[in-house]
Every structure is written in structure tokens, then in C-alpha cells.
Image 1 (spheres, helix red, strand yellow):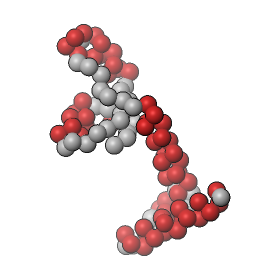
Image 2 (tube, one colour):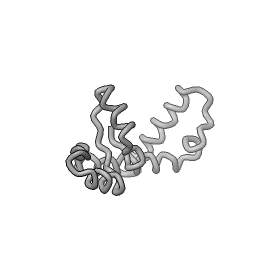
Image 3 (tube, helix red, strand yellow):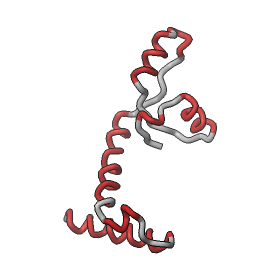
Image 4 (tube, rainbow, N blue to C red):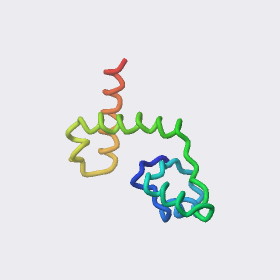
Amino acid sequence: MVADKAYSSRGFRAYLRRRGIACTIPEKNDQQRHRHNRGRHGGRPPAFDRHIYRRRNVVERSFNQLKGFRGIATRYDKTATSYETAVSLASFLLWARSV
């Protein structure tokens, strides 16, 4: 799982760890300071892969482009199947524009 700093709490990381989910979440500055102030009792910093986190940007931009389609942004479709079809069609149109 790749998330932003809003999900960097110790409780959320423990929740993911209990379920065996690997995560890449940057640590907030105040959390880093708190850990450093505690010295050796502060523990070690959580694992963070900068290269994986940078690839998250591609996914975020794709979602933003999909939200440019009014029907997807407001979800007019009543069933999940028709919404999934609309997302697939919009994704195809975005891909076709880029080629």
C-alpha cells in the first residue's frame, strides 16, 4: 500500500502490520522529531521506499484525469457494473488521446 503523510500514524501502521500489508508511507516531520527526541527509546524509523512513492504520482494524476469526465466524478450510474464500464471507457479514451 502506498499512502501520503495523512496515514502515517503509529496506529495505522500497526493495523497494516497486523494484517501483513507492506506499506510505503512518508513520516511526518513532527513524528520524526518526536522519535529523535526520545533517543534510543524512540525506535527506528519506518521503512520508506522513495522510488515506489514517486510512482504514486502517476496513479494520482490518472484519477484526476478520470474525474474530468462528469459522469465519473459525480457517479450518475446506479449499478456498479455500469459505473465500472464508464470508468473503463473513459480510461480507453484517455489512453487513445495520449497515443
